[in-house]
Image 1 (cartoon, rainbow, N blue to C red):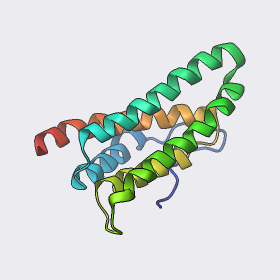
Image 2: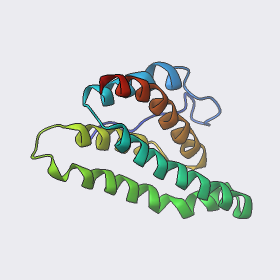
Image 3: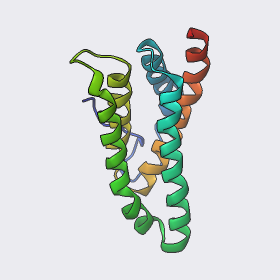
Length: 139
């Protein structure tokens, strides 16, 4: 698997990395485009991330950010497992789902707390924004 994403430039998580939503998100989007990842697959996993975000936001208002994060944390692992399961037809060769699974694992492995969860959601959103027009042109 790849290396966990680092969303913040400081240990106190006060400042997001300057290139995160621009250069890095664009590079990851192009990696998905080159692997010929289907737009529907990207949207499916992004939809699951957005559903977790919605659940987190409801819980955050009820219980606070830390408690909300601890409740959704197991589902981040489940999302990783689902993406890995999508590789089952890989036959030990890199393909679209291998690339998408690796990308999602890198993003999810960078999530350590509520702040990094929120940054991850925004990061994946940026990747999807860069990915979609190029993937649709490719078709």
